[in-house]
Image (cartoon, rainbow, N blue to C red; front, side, top):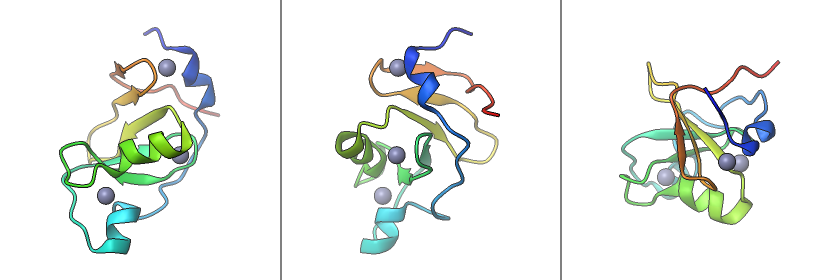
Amino acid sequence: MEYCEHIDSIKEVTPSAEGCEDCLKIGGRWVHLRMCMSCGHVGCCDNSPNRHVTKHFTETAHPIIRSVEPGEEWGYCYVDEAFYRSLPEVS
Ligand SMILES: [Zn+2]
Ligand SMILES: [Zn+2]
Ligand SMILES: [Zn+2]
């Protein structure tokens, strides 16, 4: 699989929270969870009312996210609007 240049920015991260960090603060609800691959920030997807993971990209310009839904390992680059079936392992 070919990746964009932003793949170099991904790190070995651990999820920042068990749910969307920002929804947990405001008592919001989410549909699916995504994780930022630059800092481990967990946020909610674009089907969620607050779209926190997109907001995280807008605020930080961290380009790559992945799904943290059980059984899902796809990733996405916001800058290139590119979906990846899986992301490379970071050692
Ligand atoms: Zn990219
Ligand atoms: Zn949220
Ligand atoms: Zn981040």
